[in-house]
Amino acid sequence: MTARTTLLRAILIGGAAMALSIITATGASASCNIGYNAEGADLSGADLQDCDFSGKNLHGANLSNANLHGANLSNARLNNANLNGANLGGANLHNVDFEGASLIGASLIGTSLHQTSLLNANLSRADLRGVTIGPNDRLQTMQASGVNFSGANLSGATLQRLIMTRADFSGANLTGATVNSVTMYYANLSRAIWVDGSVCADASVGECTPR
Image 1 (cartoon, rainbow, N blue to C red):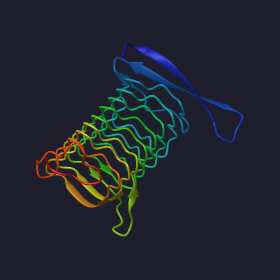
Image 2: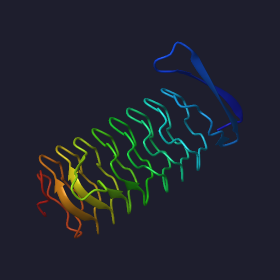
Image 3: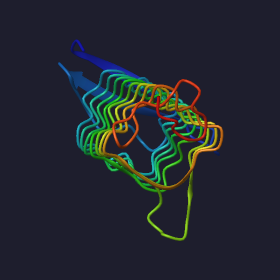
């Protein structure tokens, strides 16, 4: 990112006033001060490492290729946001709303997605090595139907107590992953590498049928 000052305009929900949040970028760095409502904000390529965005409204925001390493995004709204190529390693993603979000090629290495909504989210080709996806409470399940993990690296990941109806795991790598109490009705597992290293047949639906 070249040095520049980006002015973000966000209309506050329930009020007529317009809130202006100024983000000053120097080289690849940017301020964390975006205000509570940053719906639709353009933060593409910004350096937001260790920023506290907990509880923020980032619905539809453009965070493609942003550096969010170590950021606190707990309870944030990121539904329909663009996080393609973003670095989310080490970020706090507890109870984040990623419904309909695009995280193509994003890095989430070692993160914990507890109580996180992944409904219809696109994580194709994402680096998900060692992630934990599922609820904290052993009596609960988490909804992740329609999520796209095609071509993603899920090696060493833990998937637990999930409802993943019509999820797409085609070509994904789940080597060494732990899959526990996961519902995969109509899930596409064609050409996925299963937890034991076997390759799923092209017609694998709902479960891995080794080639």
